[in-house]
Length: 374
Image (cartoon, rainbow, N blue to C red):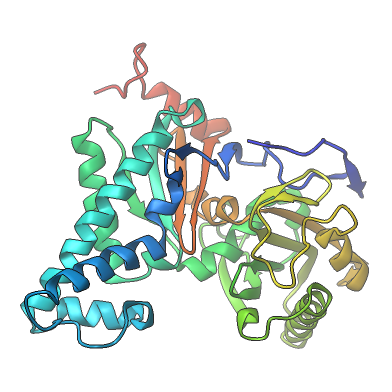
């Protein structure tokens, strides 16, 4: 994993380290793993577009001998709801075509995961959570379940589970795990941002720390979405729009008397350097040139919104798959090491080792050979 130089800044004693390995509850063992085979990045074989490719191939094949049971609509125009409805509908031939694509895609997903599991950073994996937009569908859940069966059949005693939250919410909620609990004490909520190649989402995360200090009941209180792909803005215009989204959310929180911590957590694609610069992987972000040495997103937001609740704004950023994974921390406390795969335009990936009692509990369940004790 490529990492930036650990150049630290502090705000009132809090280390400002973006893309950090050492987080309050977990160690980030690996993320944005760019494992390749002869065909290129292995993650490309288990992306949303890869599933669409499998389904398209099946449809082309069946047209050689008759009508396409999925109709005339191109595969790329079929929504998740469309495909779910066809699979669960009365036309069993249409369902069979989709099930075939699911099975082929699940095979690719299982193969990709098996290759990750052979990496040193992934060898202590007890469970893998699957997130991303593809997960939020019946077809996606079936593919995850089938891939889990195939992985176990290959001899890997791990569970594949859908990520607990809606993927849109997980990409925001995970930001609350980027900072120690003392930074959030006395506050009810934080601001979070999830930037992708198609959409930009900002939200207010209600923490509910008084009753659930592990953030297991954290939820998105309000959020707003901008599909920037439709507007193709310049980078500067995209930042201005994001600032407007955040300022609107701040005003709503103030009106509702929701105590906001002076924090903005950001989820962003790519390798994130310690100073907040994007090393690589930001090529699909709006307007381009997000990887320029002259541009720093956390600094730009802190300058545009210098104060929240009368306190200096603290901005921290990490990779988007890492932040989706962090939302899963409260539900991974019975294993030592675990991973996350996010199925979207590409395949995001990250691996974590629990710290403290969670990590110790996982180790205690293992025998001397490294396998789980009976």
